[in-house]
Amino acid sequence: MNDFTISLIQIRPNGRDSADRLRVLESSVPRGTDVLLLPEIWQNGGIEETKHCLEALSQICAERYAFAISGGMPWKEGERKFLRTWILGDSGEKIAHYDKAHLSSKRGEDNIYSPGDGPTIFNIGEATCAALSGYDLLFPEYCRQISLAGVQIFFVSANLGDEFINIWDSLIKSAAFTNQCFVAACAINGNSAIISPFGEVVGMMGCDEGVLPISIKLSDVPRCRKTIPLERDRRGGIYAIFP
Figure 1 (spheres, rainbow, N blue to C red):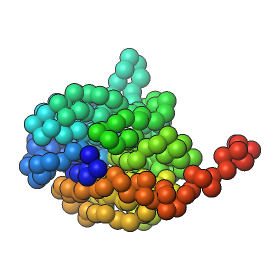
Figure 2 (tube, helix red, strand yellow; figure 1 turned 180 degrees about the vertical axis):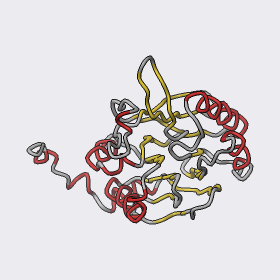
Figure 3 (cartoon, rainbow, N blue to C red; figure 1 turned 60 degrees about the vertical axis):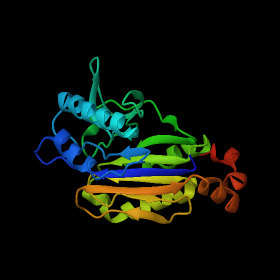
Figure 4 (tube, one colour; figure 1 turned 90 degrees about the vertical axis):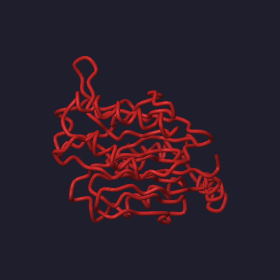
């Protein structure tokens, strides 16, 4: 699976039934899509609405034979709540999840949710992938450790505040270029995009709801890492002196 098609589903909560709106947008997803990617907190409501939307997304995966990255959604385990991204398989089953590791204190997320324990790395076909939040990209040391584990695609679900709008393009380009991997980023604020390991925009959306299918070549990752040998030039031993 060198050629890999990702469909960005740019959707936001607006008071209407989230699962129904997902079904409308799903009609624009082309056959042959390998992965569906959604933004963070695109559904209306809390835990029950999350379950409702996951059921709809699971059905779409089974019908389309596609994987899906659900984006961060409220989830509860015992007394703890998380912003949890589910990774669904091409039969609609849950195969992994990622609990948002970095919570925004400015937005009060740390008063509502518990942080996750770290990254979730998984495989889709030949691709080694990781699920992240948009806020995670502001912690490059976290992203670098993930890329050093051999990850080829960062699937980023974002719900950043307005103060990040002006740097969004630079943020996702920098994450792709410095980690030499694809960044597929779906944002509730708009401008969802896929960036190549060379920092090039493969495709970008505007601010409206919609679907953007984009095909990428996984072979671009080793080609980039061979052309610009950052891992060879990295001096991990000297970085430990910093807190």
